[in-house]
Length: 207
Image (cartoon, rainbow, N blue to C red; front, top):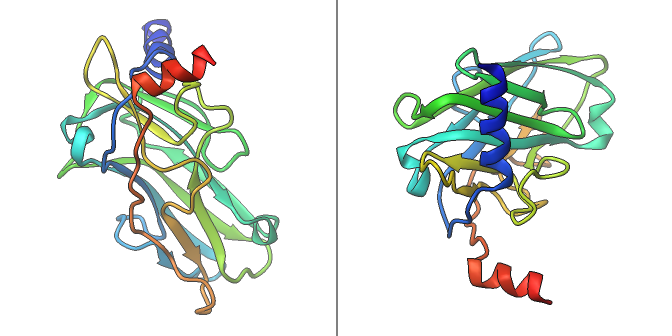
């Protein structure tokens, strides 16, 4: 069964089709309920969460997700980040807080509750006090789909499993802030994405 799911994950991410602009997002939140992207530690500890917010083309559900969460280098050395993937996931490869990132998949199309899917929770432990620690959603290294150089999810349109970007490559999409002193503000506004059309992709390979 696990081998079958691994094959599904590989096919979905590597051979997925390309979608146009969409509104599905992956958000990093500074609380367990997924309601705020700005928060402060208490006694050096904070409980956060990562959610997929379904909309547009992804409103009918998703089958996989691939991304990483980049923490600014100044504060990263003073934080111990522990990630726990949601039990609903069938496969989780990697860790969103590692340099490479994470790939995850469900055994069937997933819609979550009220168009929101909990991808996992995380615990922040300060080894030394931090200020304005930025948590930015970015692409996994290296994206499984060579056409889409971005954080992505795949749709429930078997056998195609269309891949869609949730943020432009290396954007400041969904910037959460830990222990803000007002100098850095969180940015939870989704960034509009326009993925390449298949015609544009063919031109790339023709050249």
